[in-house]
Image (cartoon, rainbow, N blue to C red; front, side):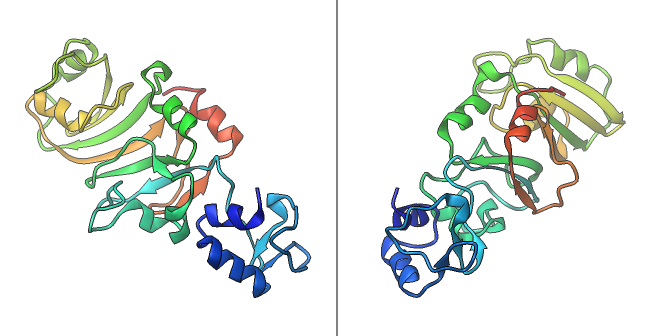
Length: 235
């Protein structure tokens, strides 16, 4: 792939804008030597304004989503893309969220431009566990764990029961819930089905991958070891 197209696909600008960057001498190798549009160099050996290129196509990252941000690209309010470099929104292939966390849910969010990886993560066959901590409006009754684990709980407007889920009481009004599904507002609707209301919700883990101290609003690129953990150890 020609350098102009490669850099444009990473969101740095249109091909015309990237061509102008070459003319201005802003694109160099690690030693500061100016590169030209028809040069053949490795991705890792390209610098723009002395900074390495963003990761190539196949990017996967984890983000610690704060409350108040949506996973949409069109929402008029705060969106998760605001927490990333602006050019990430212009990448081709598109950088997409892997599933969604609603505006009032914080925690671990995965994003990727690799369609195969995205579908592998969300596929029911993957059986990737997702761990949530929920703060509740009312104290737990004591029978929720058995109901959630039964595999018979039916949510309103659904035609099939939920897969068994594991609940652990952390305090009278706080619970940890482990799911292997990702239905719309599932945790909130599960607690509503047993007469409770979720006041705060946080996702701490997907598969074997957790936030590991990643600050709220921060993100980092996933490497091969991260992806191995994601599909490896389960909660």
